[in-house]
Image (cartoon, rainbow, N blue to C red; front, side, top):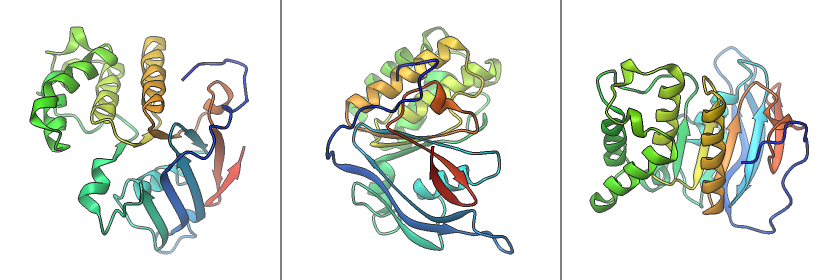
Length: 234
């Protein structure tokens, strides 16, 4: 993804590419509260990246967790390449990856390479491809000098690069990113942007959520703000 410090334009239209992620009429409300997601519909096609912004606590993470099949909406439909998170759960999960916000999800005593190998096994990647994909992730996220380091001996930015490497490792079709630039320095930003570009080039789609105005400095195919449970084009 190319950085454009003063640009607010979106990427040119790519034509009628195949729909990867479809969210249709989603409604989610926690008990005793108004809907945090209220009739949200969104389609991401191959090679497209969409940004959703909004203040903290507005419901961006909830929307991503619904899209990833981790929680269910009261109403509406989620599909990835036509697969349902309920009816086709195993196959659905093979095509989706979620980077959660924060710095959790790592084991203190596992090294970078051990984390990636473990993640490759969890994602049921073919045994013969695991080493190649792990080594490529280490290179893509500039983790070569850290490959043997334990997670609890790394900085927050280094751990974020590891978490991103785990997210992109299985080459998912739908990549869901919750505040992916947290704790990254300029080199980390560049690594993330290059990895997004590579994923888009192979036909993945990316949904990027953050509270910051990243739609002002990065190019997206579409950008929205989540307000009162609704998606508002920005």
